Length: 296
Image 1 (cartoon, rainbow, N blue to C red):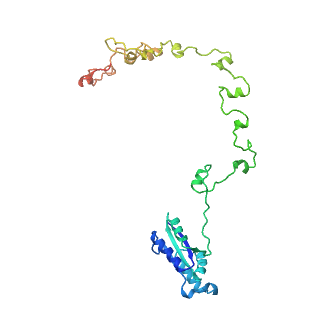
Image 2: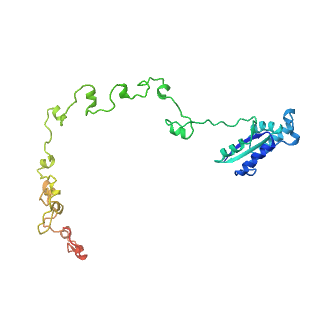
Image 3: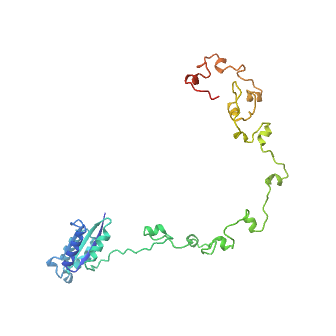
């Protein structure tokens, strides 16, 4: 990607100086620097209206990838003795090429170059300023103005609180009630029950356990030392580990609650009850095999 920059010089000496300066800064070869001067037969062609000679000059300028309508204007100056220098600056080097061309006394060629407005960085529009893009609108209330609607507040830098003459922050737990000098709706912890004159459902700290007649702990067992476990099989290892009372001593609580018989009554395993051999007869065979202590 290149950027094309053309400058017209009044004489060959200035044009040659510009070309040498460009070469010293890396702009070399016809691919980057293209020079068109007037042939001897073209002297005065612009004044006499010699169109064939002007057309030949236009064709030469166009070879330097200058657009045709610009080349027509450049050709008139070249026919008067001027020299056109065109630079195809690689991406990122157009500014350097422009500075070099402009310090060797170029003259007007009749073609106005592009004008790039110099934008000032505005903190209110940082993205537009950084990308040198104009903002879409400077209207503070574009929607209201587009639809010809009145704004809720007269536009200013004041906040809603300032417009209503209220402080910004409130120390009150009920700022709206305080602002309107109204009492709060209720400071009752059970407002619905009190409003309808109904008793609360439960007033126990352990309402669920109390309703089922189950014991509950207060959390002190977490900090209590772990008591020694009595010898023998431990049927409630988790409760025993943390010294928490069990909810029920019933071995089959669900069956007992709904009055259903248990599948096995003699304590034997399911495999034994249906006549299937077990894989391991020793209850602690794996731990014994690897000489690991039992957790429970």
